[in-house]
Image 1 (cartoon, chains in turn yellow, brown):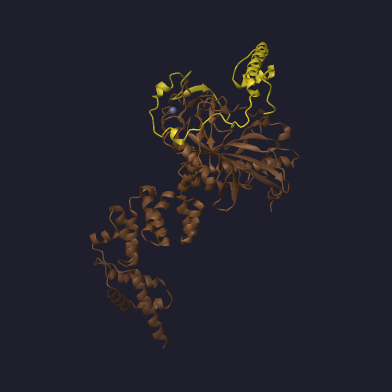
Image 2 (cartoon, chains in turn orange, yellow; image 1 turned 30 degrees about the horizontal axis):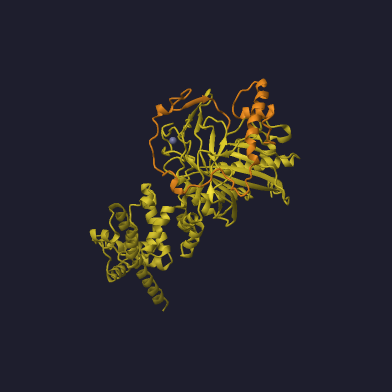
Length: 102
Length: 521
Ligand SMILES: [Zn+2]
């Protein structure tokens, strides 16, 4: 990756749309750039907060290991149920367009 | 020195290794689906590992502990709390469209591993926890692929080294050392054929003496020890061939292709490729036509994974007290264990074989604890116990013979309760088959040692009755000795008690010495 693209620009929006597998028409890109810009401006208020002395990280308090799930087997779904929402079914599995690379 | 060695010798190979080790827990990382290799496709899935909306992951305590144990064994720096992150990408085997991994707070940073063969120390970069993806299969020529999500959500420890390897042999040493460590720590089954261990290597070369590292290639799809060795060997040759042609390798990702034969350097610009023969000239002579790394993507095409902290999972505390507890509970690691066995008089090779097989080493320890000296205990465990296990295809963990029976065997050998040969060849197989102690087997079948005087008398008789053999023996024909031993054994054919061939041999030696002396006089 080179330098991140600015999501306030049509180029930046096009990049994010590609990563999100969203098909946006060229005329939608500028409109979306403006929308995204407003959202980012609103969120950027947070940048003015004084975070001196606040530890980095997502969570206030870490849970102890006791809060973790015990390694005990729970029933899985029947195969038919698991595949119920599959767009297409192959032999015992979800069928998708052919994937050759990787 | 061959031309090939001479060219390769001008450059230094630099390799770092990444290992994905599937943790041997009962269930997946975030749900209770059972982990089971070769279960029917999609029979081990649930709304969590299928990525259905509205579900929440619940971290598996055993997976967390196992990954921590590994990080502690490497001596990693541990943060007081660990968090997980989202790695976003689209691929059919990834139902959530993101993988829960660690980016910003690895479970462990740094640490090291001492290689078992060379004794060299390799620096670790980090150890972190992540979930495996599902499995895609594609029928040759078909227009569709099938996704099996049984593997999706399997806990993985990703183990990343620093670029500390300078040869394929060193990487080999590392793979063996790591495998043994993972088994000893009971964190991974290490069955390659089940995909328990998957490797990636980052490979670069630089002119000898140059400090700066060359641009590195990441090689993916290294699913066997041999693929790792071959992938690195190939990449070494390809990059040196480029440099020799005045071209500069670039940072890129390549796939190891065991059978690749038709698409040599497809899609690679002229400035970054050399003729096939130039690469082959630098490969080992027995390389064959196939097997190479296939270009996958350049640095510029690298994914943008938009990592961010996983909002569905809390942070988990790693308290110093807990780390201490894990450290104290670590089993003895393979390196120190080998040294200890060798110090007890166990031959080097046997010490290595024992250490490699954790249940067998545990069994060996039990035999020693019963008072059998280490070299003898190792000998019985590798031979008598090993043969019994091999014949039944069992691990020492399921050994049908208790360690006490081995100790009993040893006591009978040392106490000369029966000839050693008879104990090993006749009594031991019955011990294994019938589940009785060797002394109980001897009692059941009325086996007892012969009085030494009887053996001496019978040997003297055979000596007198076989003058031809005696002359042959005096002439230095060792075969004659066997004939005489056979004659003595035959004399006891009808008896339940069998003479010890060692006792016969000792008497024969004495008779022989006497006879020689007599003839000299
Ligand atoms: Zn599940």
